[in-house]
Image (tube, rainbow, N blue to C red; front, side, top):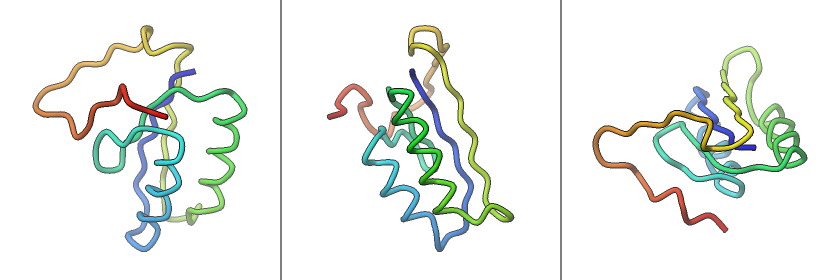
Length: 87
């Protein structure tokens, strides 16, 4: 599945969240990651993020689609990074 994660977390937790998400997804913009995940990876990511954030102060949104081709993505300006190079 193709997943986009948008987060707004306290400054003291930003690096932990970003470092963790970099293991699985592409960092496309400040507080935004996207990439292909298996269902098991998606569950693992959500579970770990739940541990990293303060549930009463932080907010994370998960957008998912069966495939990137079903997602209408448009860019304006210069992207932060090429999202086609994930290991």
